[in-house]
Length: 115
Image 1 (tube, helix red, strand yellow):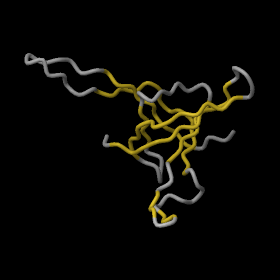
Image 2 (cartoon, rainbow, N blue to C red):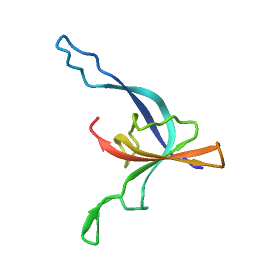
Image 3 (cartoon, rainbow, N blue to C red):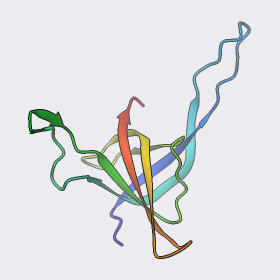
Image 4 (spheres, rainbow, N blue to C red):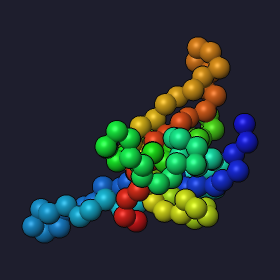
C-alpha cells in the first residue's frame, strides 16, 4: 500500500481549572509525528461541493493510515501536505482487516477545524 503523504496525529490534554473553577480549553500536543498516510476525497476528484437532486453535498476528506498508527475520535490530524494543509477532527474510523484480528489499515473521515 503506497502512502505518499505525511501527517501528525495530536492528542488533547485537558485544561486546568483557574481560581474561579473555570476550565481552560484543552491544549494539543504531538502524539505521533511523521506518520505515512494518504489523503483523498471520498469520490475521486470531487473536492468541491456538487448538486445532487437539488441538495448540495461535499465529499468527505478521507485519510488512510497504516495499522501501526494509533487513532481515535478524541485525536486530531494536522498536515502541511500541499492540497490538504490544515487541522482536522476525526469524524469516523473504519478498520480494514486481512482477516480476524489482523488489521491492515484504517480509513478515517476528517472534518476541518480551526488550529
